[in-house]
Length: 158
Image (cartoon, rainbow, N blue to C red; front, side, top):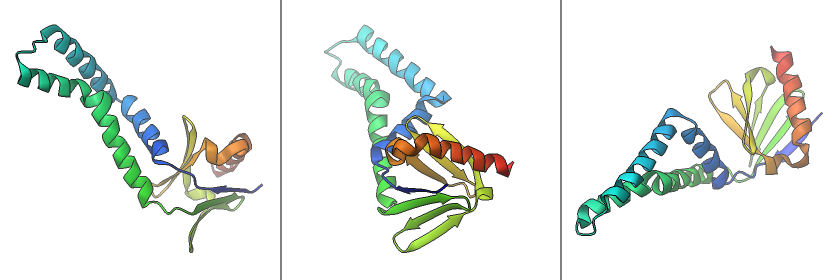
């Protein structure tokens, strides 16, 4: 079986993955608790005559629900901008061939550490600490057959 996918990763895809990992960690739980607590404190202590203090409270209220996601999106946009625009993944029995312009690389199946199925994407983790993201829109209608193929190849590796 052979698959060929053109890379269609957007800044939103990377942002979504980053936000998922942030808010499914202890830091994310602390962010949520802090945001709820500071909103309640701001409501409780609201006093328009204390403009400086209220400005600090309002900044803290938007820090995690607004500013942090915005900063993560800017970082994701920078990461996507650094990626080659014409990446193609050719996946077959011998491994994964990555073509970016005139550069080619080949990963054999024994270099693939695992497959992570995240919301709306599949990430292929390599032994070099790299990962290759294939979104659902990239995989299209081949997603199920591709996942079955990956499982069969990685089972043979064990």
